[in-house]
Amino acid sequence: MLHGLALTLFLFGQLASAAAPYSEYILAPSSRTVYPASVYRVNGTVSGAQSLVDSPSNATAILGGNSTITFDYGKNIAGIVSVTVGASSSPDAVLALTFTESSVWINGKASDGTADAGLDTPLYLSVGAGPGTYTVGDEFERGGFRYLNVVSNSTGTVEVKSVVVDYRAAPTQEDLTAYTGYFHSNDELLNRIWYAGAYTCQICSIDPTHGDTLVWLRVINSTQVIELPETVGWWSNYTITGGKTALVDGAKRDRLVWPGDLVVAAPSIFVSTGDMDSIRNALDSLLSLQNSSGALPYAGSPFIQVTKLYSFTYHLHNLLDIALYYEYTNDLTYLQSVWSNFTLGLSFTLSYVDETGLLDVATDSDWLRIGMGGHNIEANAILYYTLNKGIGLANILNDTGSGSNWTSYASGIKSAANDLLWDNSSSLYRDNETTTLHPQDGNAWAIVANLTLSASQSLAVSNALKSRWGPYGAPAPEAGGFPETVSPFIGYFELMAHYMAGNASASHELMRTEWGFMLDDPRMTNSTFIEGYSADGSLHYAPYTNDARH
Image 1 (cartoon, helix red, strand yellow):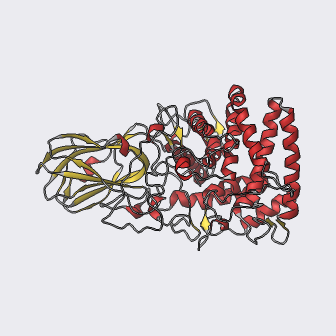
Image 2: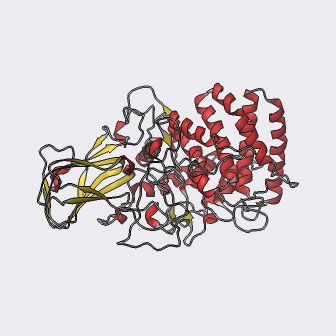
Image 3: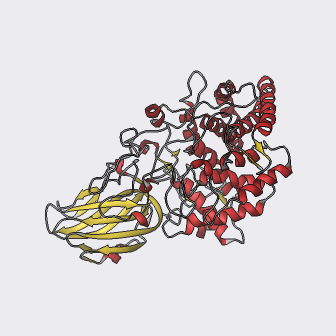
């Protein structure tokens, strides 16, 4: 969800100390006890389903055999489901629960997916023991769903008195609606996008003892075909960080700490919920995984231990997370405590700068784009940006030696990138010297990092990127796919790039187009943003073969 969810909050955010003046836009529930907002549909023999909607009292719904109620919560929610039942006609009565974020995957036989193939197994409640409340286990906290199916597959009847979700996201936020920052403009769509961005961050802040849904990582892969009636078991009970809250990449999946997602989310959280503890705990978990060479993790535990993958770009995102955390907290003591992590990490990357003056990327791991490696423009732009952030931090800490060394490297990268990778005929940078591909990521980052040589060059890149837009947003040709892929993660950096190039109208237009589509399309949650989709508007993200998992 955050991985690839370009949140736009910081572009407009303003802090406010008064009570929420724009509370009508806040999507977080006012109570952690959440009831269905409506009945989406029923199948089979069902009566009284509507009585279970909106905090009911004296409600009763009757499900006959082989019947389903599909509830719509009106937005993405997260938590543990409890069902209170009255009479059941059989001691063997069982209710099945299935979940989905999108209406596309509503199915009484399975939930949407978390693995590389297949759909997730239903949860089962044996409700034939008599009246009472039946609750799924804590390990079955579903991190993101808008639709809930309650299914009776037996031949008897079950009397349902209530269906309740104990909302578990943002576990340390006592009042989920008490934002510390607000936004309002004369553009209602932008207002709604801002608050959906805030809510996306909020629902991705989780209890760290309920992390990691990639329980079949390196066991189930995308080449496998898993079709109903076969399903894939799921749970989420791995401790991913210390503390009581942590920011993860996605509420439903992966529920892991990814440094690139922190780069996107930290500014957004600062100007909305103010939940810096979630960022700090996530960042600390990443820094604890730095090895003696200085290399920082591609992602947090247990992903990195299972895959042993290394990413040059995500290594740098770790360092940018340190800079961002200091920028938004002014916590000098913390900066001093992690300065050795920063300097060692940057030294590790600089050891791969070759005689051209550019970083020579030796691995292909990145944000699921293809073609990462060599003198890649995205990686070099991020390194240039990180060096300049580091120079600023070194000045604060009076580390003149590091600052001087990094200034020299930064100068070499800027010169070499423009000499070797700039394509004047397209007004864009090439991915590397050996390709004609002009990536979205590297060109957006070139403006953000100030790798360009002039304001006119930045504006030329901005206009060239804009010229490639389609009806559903900005394509990322480096991600592959036909039609091309739209990556809101990289789109976030393009939004910044247009602003920094002096092309604010392009940024606003892209927000309305791409984020407006994600917010208002009827297949979406209408409350949170997604990792990616195809440029024709289909809900297929090229890096995944299992559409149900994203």
